[in-house]
Image (cartoon, rainbow, N blue to C red; front, side, top):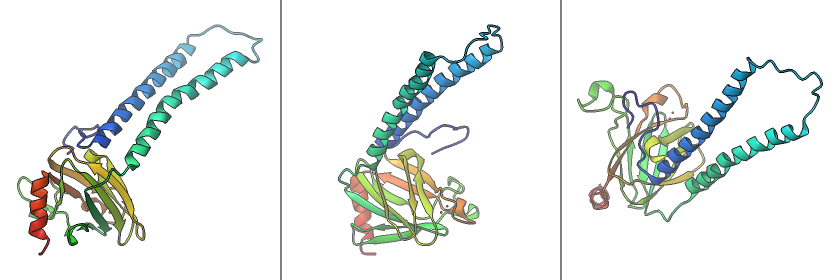
Length: 229
Ligand code: CUA
């Protein structure tokens, strides 16, 4: 999770987030190169005393400075499209989780396993454990198996919410009357924190998401303990 002075992206916990970070760094590098070049050019213009009174047009240079930026943009556009389609790919998921946004909490359904369902509320500050994270911990965590392809279906019961977990590279809107789909693969155990990221009302800030990533045999144990309760 994000802690003090962590202003950049969180460490990735899924292959898709890793790709997103690579793309971010790639695009930023191109951006820095353009900014430095244009900044240098603009700065040097202040000291330029050469004047050409008869200059009206320059076909060649205009061709060059139109086509060159277009080619540079391709180096961002093509990897961006690759990532876009990669994010949309569903790779035979072994678990499906349904998350429903409410004002102001999430509820979850594991439809594969005799429909386990529960609500997940933020723990208020005055009830927080000493090692708890304020505004981030919930009473019922989402338990998911690591090293497995997971599909999530997101919807909402009242207004638009957004199921967002930065470390997994997941951000899906929950929209009333619709069912949105995405998928991810968690490649390590741990707790992954997220928040609603669609302005959904007065307590928008207080409907966090906590994913508890566990080994598959632990997950099966958890499922079998909960299936008939
Ligand atoms: Cu739900 Cu913001």
